[in-house]
Length: 215
Image 1 (cartoon, helix red, strand yellow):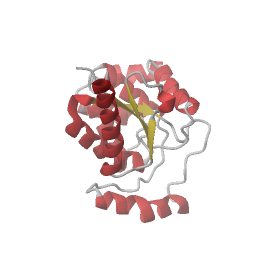
Image 2 (cartoon, rainbow, N blue to C red):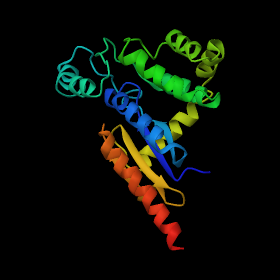
Image 3 (cartoon, rainbow, N blue to C red):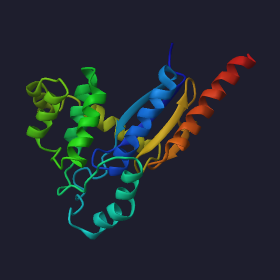
Image 4 (cartoon, rainbow, N blue to C red):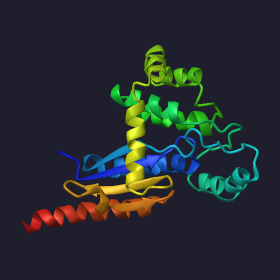
């Protein structure tokens, strides 16, 4: 049976709020099962040549103190402000490499964990090879794919689609149903609680079922 609802989730591996939303989406998949398809998509907050944030800058420390740490505690997650602020293009390319190998979910979670719990540089090829091996992928094959840009166009296309849809911040979730133009979908912006995401998904599923029963 095909999924009734699709969730397109734009996020960045250097965005703490995206990591904080990851288990929320996991719960959605657990509850709704095959009725829901979750598709994570790339959104680089600071692509070349945009400067990365200063790790020791006041902005990051304020955001983490006021928002990230309290939300992490509330959700039972152990995030730490990393001492580095890498770019994320290569991490996205590894994730897409893993998607083709059927290991996306594992690589996706491992990338977030490596950066936000272990403070690793997810722009470093050696680190990405370690992650690839950790999730059951060939590290040399993964390195070659990143160096050759095998999945680069896919990553860029995901970001262009976000721009075309007017997405300017992450995480952003678009909740759509079969046959519905993506421009008309429900939008869930920011790291929302489970109840908010569940409500959007439930309404979409109920709408489809009502439409089918009325035929």
